[in-house]
Amino acid sequence: MPFQIGNAADEGEARRGWLLGHFAEPDSALHSTDVEVKWAHHLAGERREAVSSRSAARTLSILVRGRFVLEFSGREVVLAREGDYALWDGAEPHAWRCEEDSLIVTVRWPSVP
Image (cartoon, rainbow, N blue to C red; front, top):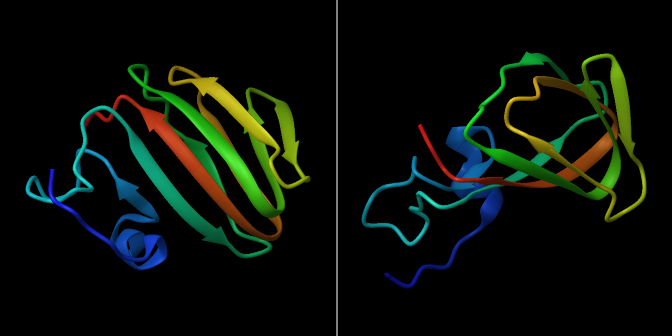
C-alpha cells in the first residue's frame, strides 16, 4: 500500500466528505473495498431527507462537535455530546438534520458501489 498524507476535508470535498473507500483511485492509499470513512462538516440548518438504504453495509456515525439529529423510521436520535454515536444496519433508511454547526466522522463497511 502506498504511503499518503493529506487533509480529510480537502480529500473528501468532491465526494460529499467521503475520504476512504472503493471510490478512491485504485493506486491510492485511500482505496478500500473493506471500509469507507467520511469527514463531514455540516452547517446549522442543513438537512438531508430520505437517504436510501444500503443493505450490504453497516454505518457508524460519531459526533466530534455540534448537535446532529438522525431520523430512522419516525425515531429521532440526537447526537449532542462529543463522542455520541449511532450504529445502524444498512437496510435502515434514514434522514438527518444539523441543529448546530457539526463535525461528524462516519465509518461504513464494507465499501461497495
